[in-house]
Length: 347
Image 1 (cartoon, rainbow, N blue to C red):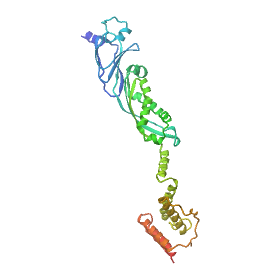
Image 2 (image 1 turned 180 degrees about the horizontal axis):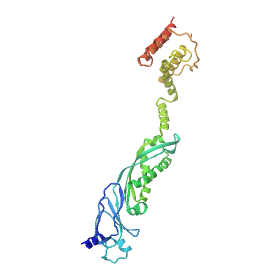
Image 3 (image 1 turned 90 degrees about the vertical axis):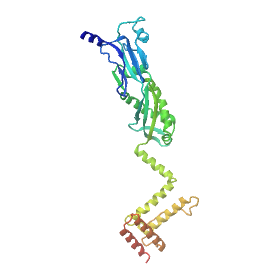
Image 4 (image 1 turned 120 degrees about the vertical axis):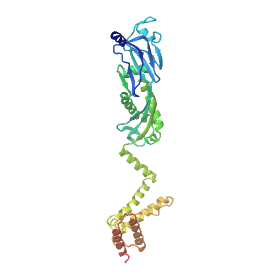
């Protein structure tokens, strides 16, 4: 009985691979000094391929199906081993299984910003990331260039090489396309297709097919993005002139909330009214650009505290300050003090 068990262990009559995970791409069938029985059964499941290796040389390749191993099903191995048309004795050969299932949701991205030359911004640094999918198509090429004689090889072992090669071609794609960053960011599908076409030959050299490559985001580093956002905001407001008008108008309530208030901006209340008049003129011009300006605004110079101010202007200023109290920008005590100061001028 022990002798029979020993003999049974020396010969293999069933060769198959039941994949126990979705990451392994290549797996060597365990031989452990055993030999393959003449007429043994080889089972290759869907999404698998099997390869017989004779003394380091790729021999026969099998797609999905069930095979009885004979000289007819192993023509290359038969030739390499100089068998006759029929052989009866067991033989030794390495057998590797390969998974041809698609590897999905593989992530790529720029760990550091990539410097590119852009038509609009000159030299800029950008980031990009996305996903890609691939599957094994040529087990012979994959075995000779990637997995070799390893007992098993996983997609995770290969991912770093694929990801870094994709990232390394991003600058080339930008340079070859000549498309500005602004336009490229709004055409991520086209950018992904161009990058995929660039990468397909490299994947094919590894025995792989690149099924898809998607760009999910193209962006600038935070400091450059902040500058771009500011530039976009200026353009939305009609250019630098409108932006300056907006900044001036924003400064009025802030000045009123500070010590001295709107009436005390600069050297006295006269300056406050002068700034207010300039802003009013600027805002009127921006609202009605067709109207020609009557005269260039004079440079604001500090006005004496005793500058004459009309009663209507004082009342209008008090009303504006009261509105700031309602918005929480002035306290009631500050308003009362400014109101008393302005009312003194009516006397």
